[in-house]
Length: 609
Ligand SMILES: *[C@@H]1O[C@H](CO)[C@@H](O)[C@H](O)[C@H]1NC(C)=O
Ligand SMILES: *[C@@H]1O[C@H](CO)[C@@H](O)[C@H](O)[C@H]1NC(C)=O
Ligand SMILES: *[C@@H]1O[C@H](CO)[C@@H](O)[C@H](O)[C@H]1NC(C)=O
Ligand SMILES: *[C@@H]1O[C@H](CO)[C@@H](O)[C@H](O)[C@H]1NC(C)=O
Ligand SMILES: *[C@@H]1O[C@H](CO)[C@@H](O)[C@H](O)[C@H]1NC(C)=O
Ligand SMILES: *[C@@H]1O[C@H](CO)[C@@H](O)[C@H](O)[C@H]1NC(C)=O
Ligand SMILES: *[C@@H]1O[C@H](CO)[C@@H](O)[C@H](O)[C@H]1NC(C)=O
Image (cartoon, rainbow, N blue to C red):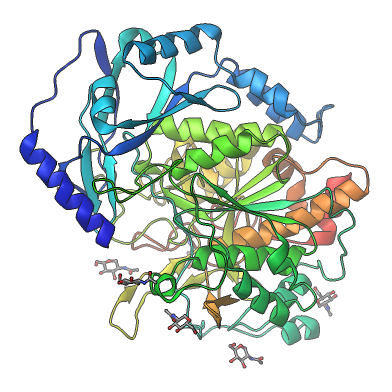
């Protein structure tokens, strides 16, 4: 990690020069504090001229009303079902009041800060500033923090605002957020490292012919989920998008090779989909260079595009690759971009009048690495997309209820607990878990093992849990309470009974046939399940359009009321993690597989009713 090392040396040099204690600015008081997550340590003062792309979240004027609209247009029993809001209507509801806007801008101007950027609804202000200026503005001190794995971020655990602005600003980042949303996938291997000794091959002749436990393919998914033979009818109108972060971009020749082998006839799609690189995101989508392959880059992006195109072709695909902040130009003191890419993508896509009707994201991080105010704000932005008729899908994670030996709270008390993920636990998104095997499908799982190089590979187990930030939304109260009641006290104190529970659904997610760097192999993860489910929902939307109906939009109110009948209940396996068996899959909804896996003809039938 050349860049990271350089950042460290610069940081320490700066500390020697500065090292002065924080001065409290007159009229300021602390707006937010957040514990530095485990595995991160402070290694030195941030360089004074380190560039920070600051995002200031202004209080939205009428989010409550937006939420009311969202639930009305997403509730199949409401008269307004399917009457999604326009881009303008959403922006009107969430734009800050004039008073909020002018107070915040006056404050920035008084601090000599100009050249402000605005989100479409003017609810976020962005500006690139050196650390020294942000430190004065927020009466704080930035440090370089290093993760055990060598990654570095420039952050502060506490910041302040003038008292009169507290009620006008929800969140400012990057400050306290240590979120590094990572792809929810396992290692890429030529052969599966383990097959369940209890596995019995399917008795159904068709399924047994096309579904290979060691390497599952689009042909298997099409038969298993009964999309086989469905021909998209309105591929001009209907689209499916997916997100890439951390320098990832789908590699077109790999996608071509995959589709040519596993979905012959669809291979041209590999070169057709638009690649949208936001905020200096990567643009090189040809074969990986040798150096890129050594960094094992684009494994996640390849999986996403191959899973989607494998099932939904010829539905048009859009790929978004978001870099840190615009424009990021490395210089001698700033070699690494440690800004927050997530919000950059959200503000980009919310600024587009037309967006894909389904958007898949396979990235997540522990909820407790994200400060609550910021998580709430990002979650609200998913609601804004939902109100416009977009289905937002997220992966539920690959570590069951949490990684063994890391299941403790981040509040300074080290309380033992399960570790939910964000944004998987946001109530306005639909979260997807992973299954394996065919008759029946069971929760995806592979035990931990030591690989050929002696490295321990953690247990892979489909993620599930309960948010500690977001409370149980009405649409799932009944099934969640029933599930908790059946637990009969098991795991009490380890999870939030009143939290938003996830996932909502699941799909195959183990030993996907896959191509990376010109090489065939297999890969696993809810990172596979999520784009697969997204591709299938894109086909449902196609059928809805073809019948003159609006797209599914925010799925959950429909799903928990009647859509669930279009899914196969998964009843075996558990969200193994934190050294315990974890939540079991049960009859009906459970926080491991949600309502289960799709039965395409039933879903389209229910959606058209
Ligand atoms: C086998 O599976 C296919 C695809 O799901 C289905 O159409 C068929 O009815 C099944 N056959 C039997 C005998 O269950
Ligand atoms: C199943 O996939 C594995 C891995 O690609 C392959 O070695 C094996 O031959 C396949 N089995 C069948 C019956 O096709
Ligand atoms: C590949 O990485 C090595 C080691 O970091 C570097 O010396 C070399 O210049 C890189 N090659 C290219 C083509 O970027
Ligand atoms: C990627 O593919 C190239 C070309 O086949 C090969 O030289 C390189 O070793 C591969 N990289 C990895 C990490 O396997
Ligand atoms: C919590 O754990 C961290 C790291 O494992 C340790 O440094 C800290 O002292 C612990 N705090 C308490 C209150 O036990
Ligand atoms: C969890 O970690 C403990 C302590 O390291 C170990 O004894 C135990 O076997 C682990 N459990 C699982 C399921 O990996
Ligand atoms: C979870 O499932 C396993 C395997 O079926 C079973 O042994 C265990 O009792 C179940 N646990 C609960 C809490 O239902």
